[in-house]
Length: 205
Ligand code: SF4
Ligand code: SF4
Ligand code: SF4
Image 1: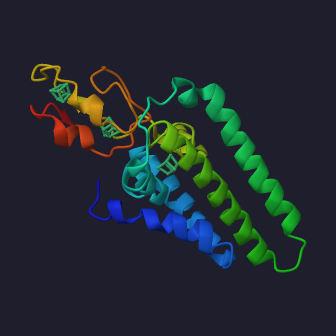
Image 2: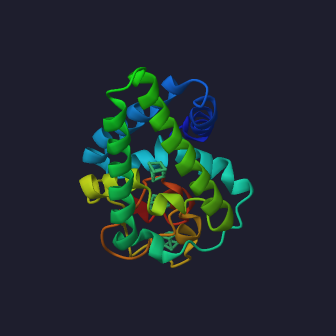
C-alpha cells in the first residue's frame, strides 16, 4: 500500500456527486482506466490495492458501516464477472456512440462517465455495507479486466517452512483470499496487508 492510498477515497465521491453539476469531472474515469490498464500489464491488480480511489473509499470509508459478512463466492465467479463486464462495456459504448452526433458532446460523454461512476459506487456501497467492504471489487469490470490482462503477474510468494498456520493473513485479506494456498492468486490486489501482519515474515512479493 502507498502512503497516499488512504486519502484517495474522497475523489470517487467528488466525481460521483460534483460530477452531476460539472460533467467534465467524469473524464477522471479515463485517467483511472488508462492507469489501471497500464499497471495491470506488469502488476496484475496492483492498482486496486494501491491507487484506486473507490478501493480506498471502501477500505477507509465504508469499513466504518460495513457489517463485514462473508462475501458470497458467486460474486467472484466468471459466470457473474464476464456478463457484468460485457454489459457495462456495451452500455458505455452504446451511450457514447449515440451521443457523438449531439451538441455538447464532450460534456455529455463526461456525464456518461459520471453516471457510471455514481451507479457503481452506490452498488458498491450497498454491497460493502451489507457484506464485506470489497464485495464490489469481486466483480468490478475494471478488476476483471486487470485480472485478465495480468492476473499471473507479481504473485505473492509464501515460505511454507516458516508459516505457523496462524491464519492472520487470511483474516486481514480484504479480498477474502485463501492466502496460504499454493498457486496463483489472480485476484490478489497487492495491498500487502497479509505481509505486514505475518508474524513469521513468510510472505513477500
Ligand atoms: S476492483 Fe474496481 S473498484 Fe475495486 S479497486 Fe479495483 S478498479 Fe477499483
Ligand atoms: S493476498 Fe495479501 S496482498 Fe493479496 S489481497 Fe490479500 S491481503 Fe492483500
Ligand atoms: S500470517 Fe504468516 S504465519 Fe500466519 S498463516 Fe499467514 S503466512 Fe502463515
